[in-house]
Amino acid sequence: MKKTNKKKPTWGDLKRQLGDLDHPALLGLIQDLYAASKNNQAFLHARFALGEDVLEPYKATIDRWVCPDLMRNQDISIAKAKKAISDYKKAIGRPEGLAELTVFYCESCMNLLSYCGMDDEGYFNALVRMFEQALKAIVALEPGQHDAFIGRLERVQSEGHNWGWGVGEDMDDLMAEYGFADD
Image 1 (cartoon, one colour):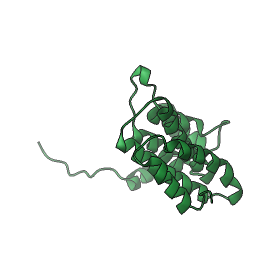
Image 2 (cartoon, rainbow, N blue to C red; image 1 turned 90 degrees about the vertical axis):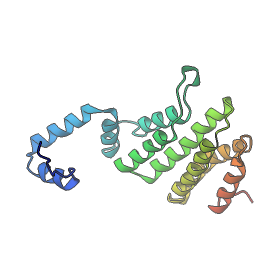
Image 3 (tube, rainbow, N blue to C red; image 1 turned 30 degrees about the horizontal axis):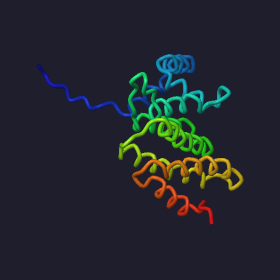
Image 4 (cartoon, rainbow, N blue to C red; image 1 turned 180 degrees about the vertical axis):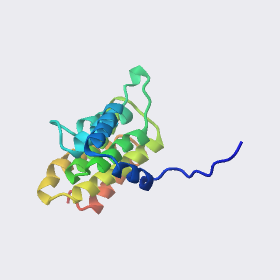
């Protein structure tokens, strides 16, 4: 059997192929991609600001993976929750949307921890890292947009003192570092 020396296809290869498509063929391709997965639909809805709440599918994914239904034996996946934020960032990445999703992630963790004791250092470390990402996203907004998001993070921060692993203290330090600590 003869070996073929084909390299893995790249974006450049695909781009050349797409350049040969006429308008109807390109629309057909996008229609097929749209029908192929809910992730593609969410991406296109966000990119073109279609629907009432383009963040809803991303929030549903985050909540599913960081605040699962334990009675149904659903598992936790920090990576899948974070991927939802990454996918939104690729689709449109508006600063206020990133702030909303990162704060929502922290709130979803808080919801789980309010009814379920947990002793998972990785989960808590990921929460603190996302708390910092939320602060970074908020700082990127206009100052008039900070208050609502900071108020929500302060609730998470307050609850963080009940969870152990130094979570509340880490959140206190981050709030101070980003200039949102109570004086």
